[in-house]
Length: 78
Image (cartoon, rainbow, N blue to C red; front, side):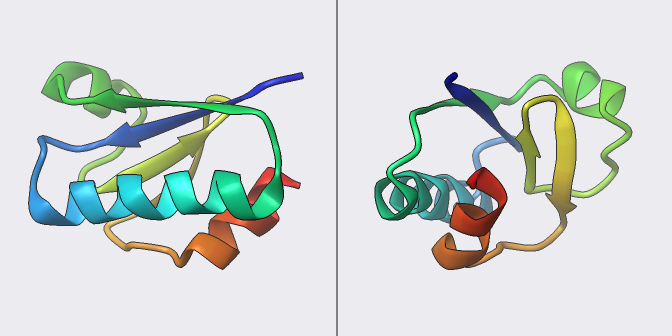
């Protein structure tokens, strides 16, 4: 079953870094995952996220306001 990763943010440098880390994590873990970006502020607020960037895995906010390492994201994917 494919995992769904969403990067919440308006496209700032931190958001881009988080997206790059998520892509690397998918490679490291070997897990099938789709990565999408959510830039709409209302959709971001619907997750209860007040600070970006944030990473959502299968509908659950895993981190907000920080950029986890690819290794940390890979652990969440397992």
